[in-house]
Figure 1 (cartoon, rainbow, N blue to C red):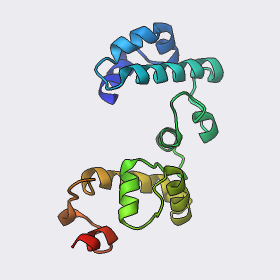
Figure 2 (figure 1 turned 60 degrees about the vertical axis):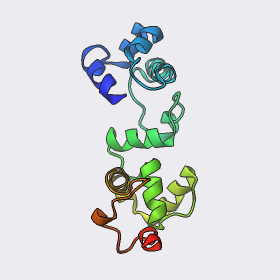
Figure 3 (figure 1 turned 180 degrees about the horizontal axis):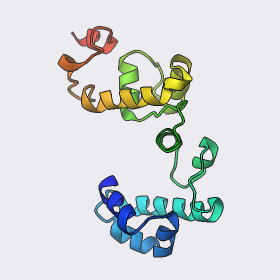
Length: 166
């Protein structure tokens, strides 16, 4: 999605109002190369419409406001708060953070909301965003769902998952 949207943000859609003014059908045509483009287009359009109507085109800066936007859950809201607003006390529970945190024995739950609570108790507030980003990247680059790269894993000596299979 980013590969398609970033160029559009630079040329065609510089503000949420630009997307609303262009209309949902045109947005769908621009996103045809994206998986599930109908749903994603509807969500992007709905978010932009609400940003224009309710927030004067500005992105709100609280979790409560962000999760009220169409198609925005806690994970996406946390990404926005951390990256856009520089808020450090957010935990981004994506599939990678979930997998690595479970394998390292940091969390017991399988539920993202509970994982967020469990990690909130372990990780200091001023490190939560950075922890999320580092652990998520570790999951993408090294601790793959299938065939983890144990040889290059910095955690393998402490990792219960690694110890259980070796």
